[in-house]
Image (tube, rainbow, N blue to C red; front, side):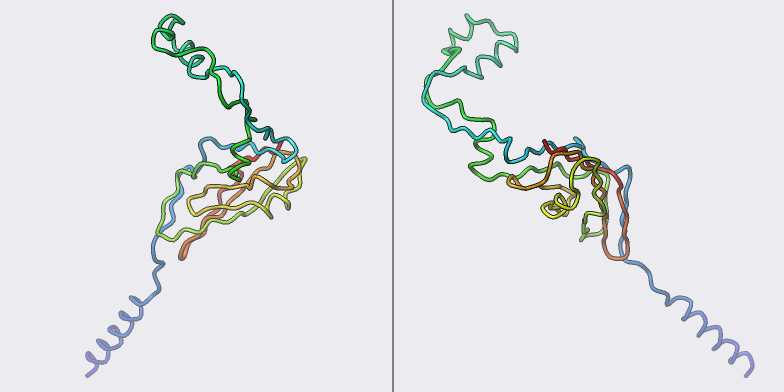
Length: 183
């Protein structure tokens, strides 16, 4: 009888020891970072959105091929001229403004984990700008892409971004991993 009692006690203790909660999945960070790790964002007042107009413009194909080592004679033989007549001369931000394209970084590299991984802004630091204004308009996607809208009111400055990555049971920070320069 005593042996059965001891056996039951050990059985109950063994079952209780095996019933602890195990965290599901994993979150692994090995030297996480962006390539490139800086995004240049223009203030609305510095956008060059001048519309294209009809005229004679330099041909970028001509310039690229000359830089690649082709001679002007070869290009003319192929029908490529140094200038073209047509619509051109638009500002460098004309199409970005026309289609309201935001500024977007590349995805972060070096992070793996069980889906779904949630990304949030941990902290924004700056020496000359307004971190709260950037935080109010900043968007971070699940793969770590950082997006700033084309039309914003963020003052000029250098902004250093720290992110938090979280999934079920895990949370890890990546400090000072991305820079946004607003000009």
